[in-house]
Length: 93
Image (cartoon, rainbow, N blue to C red; front, side, top):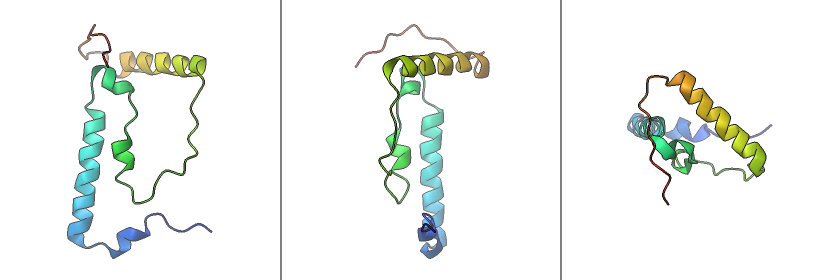
């Protein structure tokens, strides 16, 4: 059986728990409220809120599969955010 990754919560005070909840909400809102090209980026700041590091088992798709996924994601935005404003701004580093 694996250790409970959230066992640190048991030792936290109410104030610490509220602080952690607020930090998580801020990160979720920041991620939710991204726009334009920032929608496509990986958001490791959300992962940083967890006490345990990533296991390093992430799998990155090859380019053709990745691009098909990007297209499907963008198509889902047309459905889920049909009334959102549109931008023609190009991506700049």
